[in-house]
Every structure is written in structure tokens, then in C-alpha cells.
Amino acid sequence: MRATDPNIILASSSVYRRELLARLGFAFRCQVADIDEAPLENETPREVAVRLATEKAQSVACNLESGLVIGSDQVADRNGQLLGKPGDPETARQQLLACSGKQIRFYTAVSVVNAANNTIRQLLDTTTVSFRLLSEETVDRYIRRESALDCAGGFKSEGLGITLFEVIESDDPTALIGLPLISLTKLLREEGIDLP
Image 1 (cartoon, helix red, strand yellow):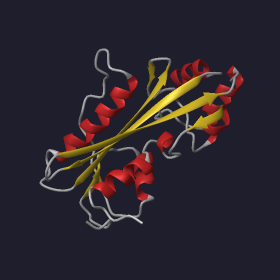
Image 2 (cartoon, one colour):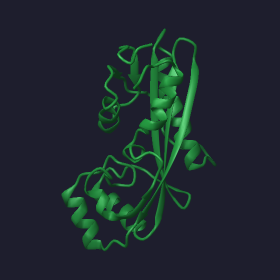
Image 3 (cartoon, helix red, strand yellow):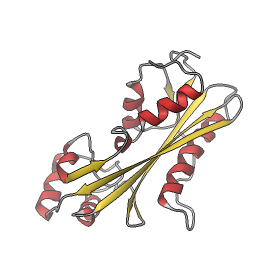
């Protein structure tokens, strides 16, 4: 299968994931996955990310006869507590202040479902972010300058959010933005997609 095959679907409405996937230079379309994203009882953060990435891809693939569907999900974990998308400035403020001086793990899962045979391939990236000590003034200034209310943890590492960190430890720099391209290209090659 050539990378220009138009039957590649990103099961997401995320502008960040769409921009990342576009870096690979092949045609694709987006379709929103209709799933319940609430964690299950006793589910670990890494299990949440893998399950949701797969469910997103499967929910779109089940209505197709062929094609590859890409699903991805990211969960931020602060000592076992899930940090979601804050949605409003006050929640973002509370999340960022709670991250001050701490290490946060981001689990970013990607799944590729082949709609023709329901084959599921999945990988998980773990990124550890060490936050510097953040004052209330720093957090308030950040929230005023950059809207990241739709991002897990309340920041954008590809923007001003990078100023909040001391260290990022990751095998894939794109994972923290929301779609681990190194893992994804491995899965696509396994499905016969020709990538450079």
C-alpha cells in the first residue's frame, strides 16, 4: 500500500493530532470517534490511554469495509491521579500549581485498526515531564499568554508550556503533543504503508 492511499482515517477531532499526522505527507481524513472516554473502575492511567486509543479506532473502523484507522489518546498521571483537559482557566491554574516541582508521566497510546480484517496494532509511549517550581504569578502569566485549556495537564509543550519544565524524558518528542509519530510510523509500516 502506498502512503498516498486516501483510505487512512484519523479517528480524532484534535487539531494537534491532525497537524502531527500531516507531517508524514500522505492523504488522510478525520472522523470523530463516538465513545465514552471516562476511565473504568480500577483502571490505571496507562490502561486508560491504550483502551481509549483502540476504542476510538475501532468505533470508526466498524463502519468501514477497508482502510486503516488511527486512534490515539493521552493521559497525564500525577502520582496515580489522572489530569485531564482543564477546560477552564481556574482548573488549569489548579492543575499547574499541583504540578509545581513534580514529575508527571504522560501516557500516549496509538492504535491502528485495519478495517478489512479488524487487525489491531498498538503501542504506548511514556514521557516524563519534570516541572520546575512554579509561583502563582508564573502560572497566572502563562494562562493569560497561552490557551491550553484543551490539553491534558493544561499546557502546550510545543508553545510557552516548555518554559514550565526542567526536563522532558521521552523516546518520541511528538508524543507529548498528542500523537507519537515514531510509534505510528512503525505500525503503519507493519500494515504495508511505504514511508521513507
